[in-house]
Length: 465
Ligand SMILES: Cc1ncc(COP(=O)(O)O)c(C=O)c1O
Ligand SMILES: N[C@@H](CCCC[NH3+])C(=O)O
Image (tube, rainbow, N blue to C red; front, side, top):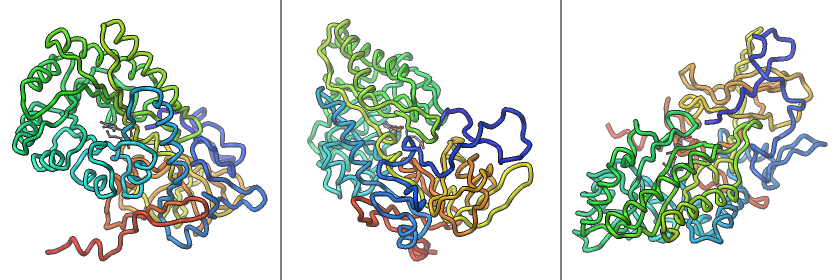
């Protein structure tokens, strides 16, 4: 989640606790390019907002609301930025499918030369069915089932990132049964407290993922992996958490992972050829967030790996990274229609939209911050401190906790929440039997549905009682 300062400010004229809110933005019609996908613009003369040359009002008309609008050019350009940043190195970029996966996205990744990281049999099926070569797929997860492991081995995937001793045995057995040797990396927890929300930090000791480096589990896992016939240990993996801006955690992780490679060489005389430093790079959800560019990350990581390897007398291993949010997060926005508007004098105005926690659970789950804009017209009305809420039966059903919207807002207006490409559709639910919204891909004046809206028949199909 964003760790930025509180971005909201008071409704004009309201008396609010002093210093609690920042001032409202000077112009509510401005769409900050930091948080909107690359092809989004607002025509100053007419106020119309377009994406990939398409008027969002026409998109709402054609595809309905709520809808995720995915800017294909933006997505592809982020893929290229990551590829280019690591292109001069012996390195691989794996897109983390958990952020958002669909067959269209897999095809774009394939065309742009990226690999995919999956963390369930379902994600693996989507990746394979869209033609991703199995050797370009990595499989993650802290509790992969025996069936999932057999499926992955049978499919011939590139590597499995092993998370536990049980999995090591299960996987070696599954591979043995199929007469193959499965390449693996071991996921280690490097003991870093990533500066992010507790639920998305993954490298400190007290959580469920990986082999503890400091507690000696990682060394034991290496020892066991090297003795099992069904697996070929090729490297070490670390993922410290998500929505991180500070490079320090990655640097510590890189140092500790290289330290383990050195220990493995000393103990076993084996130089493991690969390291994977995971994903986790933060994006701008509000104008206060300042994310790092892929190039900065590539430079910082490779410098540290080179330096540590030189100090330890190791050959430089092949490096992988796994960005998810940093690729797809900024590429999409969610389009909603305004319904009920409830002003609370001296407090704020509750603006209800036709979606909510079923299409974006992140605000309720992580206290995530988002921005929002009126996109069906421009407005010169006064700023009104608002809370954008959904239509679910929960008072925690909040999409944007604090934002300024024009105080002439009316039912039927369209709002868009930017930076909802990651962990929104992929974490969407049918709570209150909501129908999950479609994903509409837009590019060069063309729009097409890549994930269709659910229907009531979809819900009833599963209800077989
Ligand atoms: C192992 C692993 N790799 C990559 C990612 C992608 O993270 P992000 O979307 O923050 O880049 C995650 C999710 O946090 C993960 O668990
Ligand atoms: N779902 C989280 C990120 C967790 C990523 C998986 N390790 C989010 O929305 O920020």
